[in-house]
Length: 350
Ligand SMILES: Nc1ncnc2c1ncn2[C@@H]1O[C@H](COP(=O)(O)OS(=O)(=O)O)[C@@H](OP(=O)(O)O)[C@H]1O
Image (tube, rainbow, N blue to C red):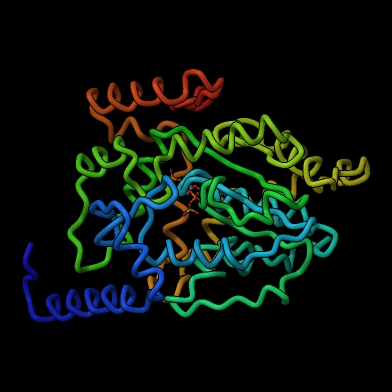
């Protein structure tokens, strides 16, 4: 749709220029690489490119390249990995609270009350190696054990992550809710120079696997297989299970990370307090998550990371034919893996 007034036109032009200048900032090597890759229309960028079997924007590809070449993992590092919109923010908060609990015995001045979880657990591809948007992060200043986030698929992780003893916690979510959560989020952060993305169009691209860090089923399957092959290396969690029994999973995360809760901690409600601190209801109402922003090139409002947090909200968006199509894809891609998802909240009274 053409812009309707001069201010709109100027905004769109500025956005377009910003996007073009981002592409111009790519290194020469990356520009050449991009030219050689298959390309499709993007969701919030003009294009997505197929790189190492998954779809990314050009700036993400440069960041992933740098990450692969430069990141040196330490044995005590922890990496939180996920497909976007699978419960990353929640898992980052829980992991930070569990792993660093000895430093913050009083929850009154806990960092999670003043920082968004993505600031405390920085992602490789959007912060640490995102030179194009002027993000810088001094790794030497990170408290240990360091906790990182990533949406990068297992196959494309920096080699040192796979070769050291550092641990990975992966979270996934049923693909119906993940798709809806992504589509709503994407339309909120859509650059002004791109049109809003209709649900049906997004769904068609999603079903072809063309979405940032997709195909989502391959992303999930790769981490799933690795968690079976190396259970001490990769802990595989599901958003729905976390919602069903967060207490059990918080203990599981602590044990996996080698810092199980003591009897004394269990008796003094340490687990319950962590759960409350990281709950959707608590986090959503914090000032930092109501009015804060993150990012440099693309500014994102923190409140967009907290929407409904329900299992089964997809029923409000999917037509019967969409249900049929995605169900078939899931059946085809996941049926032999032993992996399945709950798509309704059986505990909900509504
Ligand atoms: N604390 C907590 N507890 C439970 N659920 C939560 C929490 N924080 C965020 N959310 C919900 O998670 C969805 C966002 O997914 P991600 O955090 O993976 O997004 S991102 O990839 O980091 O952008 C998004 O789901 P939807 O509500 O369905 O859109 C959020 O509402």
